[in-house]
Length: 93
Image (cartoon, rainbow, N blue to C red):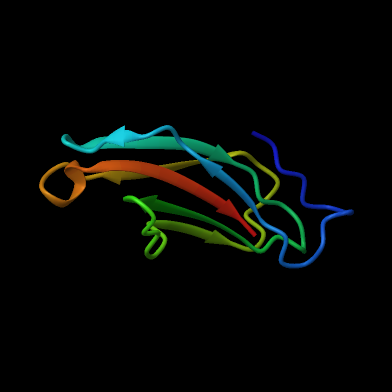
């Protein structure tokens, strides 16, 4: 997915990408690539949701991260609390 951040975007616009449901019974690794370059870059936050609860970001990058594609990695721990169906939600501001 590509999200353009230059005009005509407005301050406080956001884009949301939601993964298919993941069964968190076992530990897994989620990887993704991101490119955050420029003076007007705000933040890329990644959340894990269970149901409608979003909680705090599990991964965040803010501001200019150089003119290069970078690899992001998140570990989802399996077990009691994580054994519910989980979605990975990427929110770019």
